[in-house]
Image 1 (cartoon, helix red, strand yellow):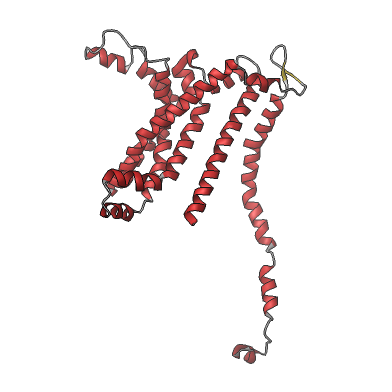
Image 2 (cartoon, one colour):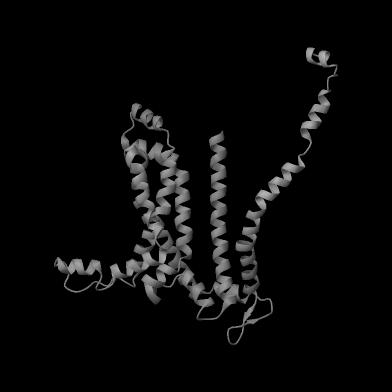
Length: 310
């Protein structure tokens, strides 16, 4: 019994009671937590899980004679989605996504590096604003702008003909090159920002230590900067590769009918072809592939975090 307990006439509380009291749950706190997260689960359920459940049900049905739905569980749509004729579309989509990701990485890394480590502090906000300016306008409007730039009488052909470089317009629109240009233009900000965020948190003293130990600028970059910025780089790769894999607006407007990708295949099945079951099956196959990529990224990030903790 301490002095305060002697003055007030109270007896000490056993430590076991204190420990058990600390372990008692807090119903009010748990209810508050449920109330806070319930809108998030509601939105996820309505906008993500419910559409997936509908598409799963549709993928197991059959197409009717006039585009309707014939009830009856079947795996024929999934079997058809792996036929060799559609493998060409999958391969083209993967190639476009990989090429877009590589080009965005090569273009974005120097930009992010300069903004994070070389640019004067008073100019960083301006440079970042220039990176995100494309988000201020509609993606569809920007794609139509590229159609005007790349067409036969567009800006590029008109400029080259005025300079005497060419004597007839180049075929730029409705080509794989046009699709690549549109994709890179649309996805570059999604690569720049994660890499910039990682480089901005980089400890400059590590670079100075590497230089003091005799490492050249190139060696310090490859052995210090690149590994430490790897989380942002991987995040940027995922943010660019996954949307590029399922894109359909850019290839539809800039590539024409000759450059069909998996996104256009799904769009056509739900639109002109009136084959929702097959379109749902292809969409779920693509979703499963994307989820596998996200699982691999989460596993890599967790393993990297455990290694850094050690």
